[in-house]
Length: 191
Length: 191
DNA sequence: GTATGCATGTAATTTGTTACATGATTGC
DNA sequence: GCAATCATGTAACAAATTACATGCATAC
Image: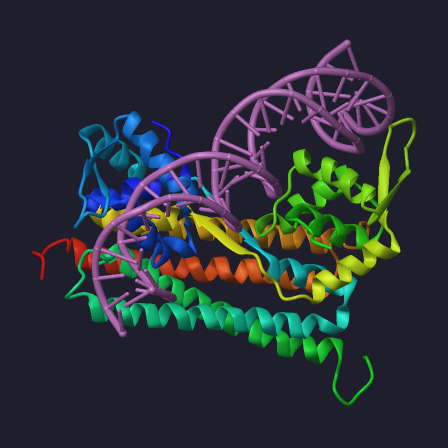
């Protein structure tokens, strides 16, 4: 059973409890988004497809006149999900425009190298701060809203997100100073 | 001038000196690939498109009967490249299946949590090692082949790649031990 | 009564990989 | 003579975002 990127996150979230497409999108946006995004444009068609394949089953869960369909895993779907999680991870991709700019800065605009490094660090610092406040709000809402990410794995990924972004922020702050020294000493000429 | 992902890396590499599509693909694969990949299927059509747009200009550079076209930046192309590098970076995406598995492991297969964390760390350790050996070979070939990545920016991105992967490896090794403790203590019952 | 949020969906476009095809040259 | 590498390209497919459309409910 080959699962595409969207299918993986759908099955993962549905495994915990029946959920609607809309709900999954909210969950993704406040949790996995940093390492596994998903858009409505793929979520809804993929839910239909997974239902056709017999991995999930939808049922009407309208609330006060508002249409709503929640899906749950079928036996086949749970098997597919468990099989997926025990198989070796394959996808690891990133696209980081800040790094690319740093990479080409020497050729295109050497004077701005330290600045680019500093900006890159600042962006990571901002993400770390964002994740930290997310962590606080998740912890605060844990009692009322346990349906939101509440297990060891999601705690770990959030902690990891904070740790890595702090690391990156530090690294590039130091690099910026370093580059400022070697590329354009403030009071002396180039060595 | 809106540049797509492939255009950015093409202009960046061409800025340093005239290059062929084939050559750029080699360069990408041994440098930016870790944060900015590109495939032949996009490189060749995009080179044509950039030429039509007047950002680059191709010229015949066949070597001993083997057809070859190298491209260089036009004035317009250089302006676009410099403008790009001084604009704030936008794209920052990642897709990490290991993190996603960790995220859902509690729901789908809690016993394997520590193992998943350990595997994730091991993968980063492997990448760090790979990048370290790449760094050595780049350093070793610097004299004969200066056309390969030889500036402060590319050194920085390579160093960064090594540092971050080592950090991730450490973090997940520690996390794996931590999870092994809290989820399945070897000789005691759950606390 | 109006803006926001809940809820579902589709169309258009872009992007990207993979696999294949072609053919020459160089090193063994 | 054969494999590897240089070199360019295209077709088929998969994936993803963005923008749009619809409509009801709730809070102000």
